[in-house]
Amino acid sequence: MARGAKKKKMKIIKADYIYYKGGYLEEHAVLFDEKIIAVAPYEELCSSHPEAELLPYVPNSVLYPGFINTHVHLEFSANRTTLKYGSFVEWLYSVIGRRDELLGECDQKILDEACAQMLRSGVTAFGAISSLGLELEAVARAPQRVVFFNELLGSNPASVDVLYADFLSRLEASSLRSDAHITPAIAIHSPYSVHPIVIKKAMALARERGLIVSAHFLESPQEREWLEHGSGEFREFFKKLFNQERPNNSIGGFLDAFDGHSTHFTHCVQAGRSELEAIAGRGHSIAHCPRSNRYLGCGRLDLETIHELDIPYTVATDGLSSNNTLSIFDELRAALMLHEGIDLNTLARKLIDAVTVNAADVLRLDCGRLEAGYHADMVLIAMDEKIDDYDDLPLWTILHTREVTQLYIKGERHV
Image (cartoon, rainbow, N blue to C red; front, side):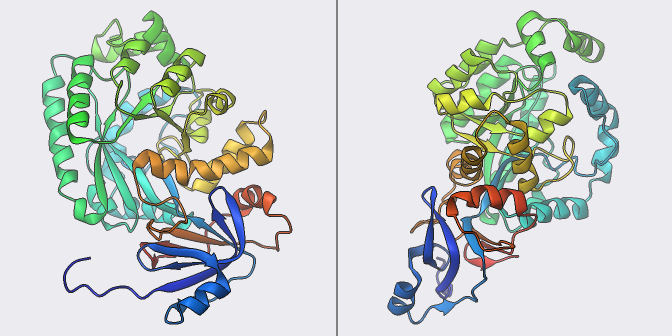
């Protein structure tokens, strides 16, 4: 705490159920200021800390750690019906064709509303994937913690030096905003859009500075066909727009570039068992964006194998360039519907962890848990009815929540 700063008053928040280490505590409460001080029976905390402020009790309530959206593009948040959905390559053509128009329409008001929409659905931290840095000021204004992934693109050897210099400039700009709850990070766009020499340079920088790294990987069938065989719709796309007739990376070579540095791979819808085993064995994780994958015709992530291999995964909204809302609950409900082969209640429990503890670990944030010593980033949800069996709580939480009742970041209420 800065010299002269006033220490925040301790508070006690009680809920019918408190999500704690993968289960639920009844008749408990959380004592907190900026951080969680203790989780204990309510009467015990009231007795041992009579000076603490008692927050009003909300009936039928569940207290969770704040939710974390690990992968969201904000720069195209002006999109509603401009871009083409249904086919990944058609969508990509529409992004390139309407890019300047959408970027011009995405003013600070739209960016602020995008952050606010996440906030209302309980998101207290997010990973912003930024290709231009245009949303840096907006995320600095937002109350959430932000891991700011400066995205690197460039597959043409003639232009990679200029693009890498621009990437470095954006990375340094985000590094200067560390006082505004922003953590600088690196995003390698994808194996089809970044030259291997540039990937090598960026990963050397990530290892040197200990930066978090994210990368799109095997999102669409067209990407896989291009990387494996140099054929398909991507061949026509790259030849037409970039005069490129062969891929710069192989699937295995791209994965090898991240060895020794835990990376958050996004999508992985077209990853086979061999790639998933490599991700598991090398300590990487996956961001699952079910609605984006469905809307762009990419397929379904093999979540059954991911569970079998015990790969850490998160659930994320992606951006409004490939989605219709930034609500984390809309995304969780989509995941429930998409993975019909997994037991419903088992999946619901895993999804809650995906947007709390798993996401915090991936983004290296001291939140995502309601335990002493972690930041007091919390969401309170009032259920419509009393819950008789707490085993049902993950499912009922996901199905019935549109907006959270209360939200705290560093102990300060924002919703």
